[in-house]
Amino acid sequence: MPDAFTVLWTHDTCRALRKAGRVGEPPPVAFSGVHTSLPAWSTARADDEVYALHVNRCAVYVVSRMRVIDRERGECCGPAPAGWSDPAFPGHRDWSMLGAGGCGAAVVHVDSTPVRFDVPVPGDLLGGLTWRNRRGVTRGLKHVVDGRLERAVSLQGFYRLTAESADRLAEIVRGAGPAPDGPGARSPAPAGLRVGGPGSVPAARPHRGR
Image 1 (tube, rainbow, N blue to C red):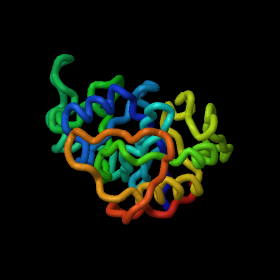
Image 2 (image 1 turned 30 degrees about the vertical axis):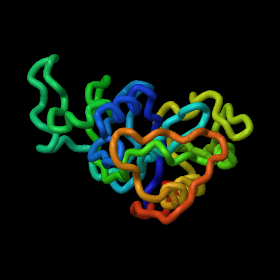
Image 3 (image 1 turned 90 degrees about the vertical axis):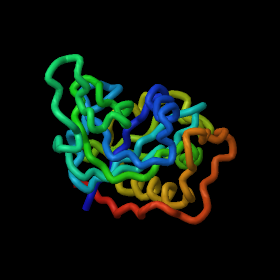
Image 4 (image 1 turned 60 degrees about the horizontal axis):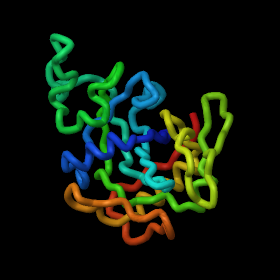
């Protein structure tokens, strides 16, 4: 059974996605690195799922759910750079804002839901989300006050969700409705966060800990 993880996409990353017109498009790749701004995906395996999260005005949004296909460089990535000024992954230039030029960047091929900024995690759920480390120790999300995330430090990194929290995020994605078209989609105001409507994205697989 697959595991599920979260990764935080920064304001700069999300701004670049909007500017490039990637809202409504599914990313074919993501990038693993060695820095807090581009954390390592070393614990992710094929079929694991990764929820890309974004924090805006103290609300947390699910930008995309990605299923890992592989972490091998392929022909689709383009030629490896011959010099320091060459792009690392010219075949994925359209998605380079996800970290192609980051420190120690390595490609992760994914099957994903379209990029969007209108799928909030309800405030009453934030305090109940939990993650676990390799030793099975669980932790929650810090700095949640009245359903608002006042500091995002607990999300900065690549972390394994507990099975219960993975299932809750999967339900949010399933109930989010059709993805918006075009680069102009905006995040809704954080007040009164609700998710509803018929689902149009692939159903998540059940999760359990390794």
